[in-house]
Image: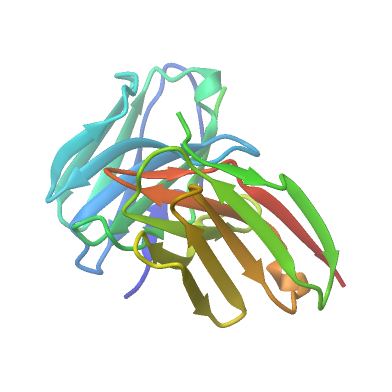
Length: 113
Length: 108
């Protein structure tokens, strides 16, 4: 298995909702990432997990809460989002150390209404 | 903040022509990577070049790296309509940081 699987592919949520994005890989990668991408812009790093521990938080607002239950799964819990949080959320994984290419999922298109 | 700058921002060519995209970066790197993204989809890793390498080939792709100028280029030879996508360079230090990207359109 050489894929990163993200669910759901599309999500529409209200500003008072709580939802979660899920990401799964079975390549044995021990680093996993969340990126946020706005239209016509490059992906921006949000969080890095290394060996299931949070190693980088790029000053992301607390309404985004990551979780890494095991070496294959990565979640992003969403609560009280704003319309400007609407974006494509990409999950990726890689080997550790970080000297290898990343494998990206196809993303979750999030719309906050 | 994003480290890389890419030029051109957009490139339109005919099928069969070569496409060259350039990337500049600001800090020291472990390696530089190129990714392709089809509209609204995930990124696909194309090629990685390490800081001690100067040139690398993969199929129709050729990547060069000049660490003294902090720049890299991606050449796609004999382009096809299916190569239409956004192309991003990304520098790897403590994290992978993407450039602004080049939108390539290959016209049939």
